Image 1 (cartoon, helix red, strand yellow):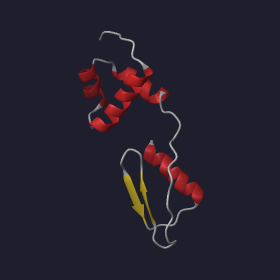
Image 2 (tube, helix red, strand yellow; image 1 turned 180 degrees about the vertical axis):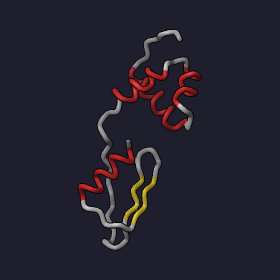
Image 3 (tube, one colour; image 1 turned 30 degrees about the horizontal axis):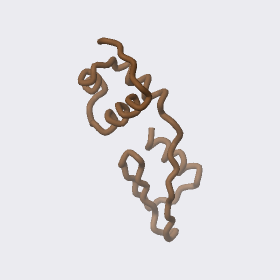
Image 4 (cartoon, helix red, strand yellow; image 1 turned 90 degrees about the vertical axis):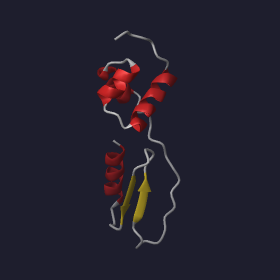
Length: 94
């Protein structure tokens, strides 16, 4: 595969495109002419800071719905301690 220098913007675009593509890493990389190790490296080094979002808290007995940046949705009627909920969010976004 031919090496080419990609801009930070192009790298971020490719990472997002991979995440939303539903393709396996190898298939995505073949389509874009890159090594799987390159995509893995970019994904590892361009994680960035987590984005904070505003939330609305409704009645204490309603449970919660958590919609992640990647579109995943977690619904639960369980009551979590704050630290447990933070671990759940980190695990879901990984």
